[in-house]
Length: 88
Image (cartoon, rainbow, N blue to C red):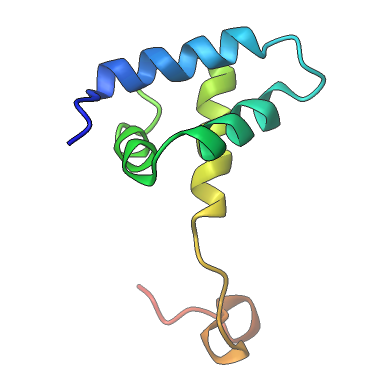
């Protein structure tokens, strides 16, 4: 294990957000930075915290990362937008 705790990852994400807060698109910049430089395990660990303790920009960046990690439907047969959902 890398030794990164959830608190440390939250601190790091907030620090990145503060440093990129004046970028033209800070949420995208933070998300891009985290995806480029963090391991999948670090990202998964912070996503598991569901935004707890994150600054707004960092929280939005992690939400963007989470959205991108949802695999797209592989075929029309598995796309709920095409045939509806059988859940629930």
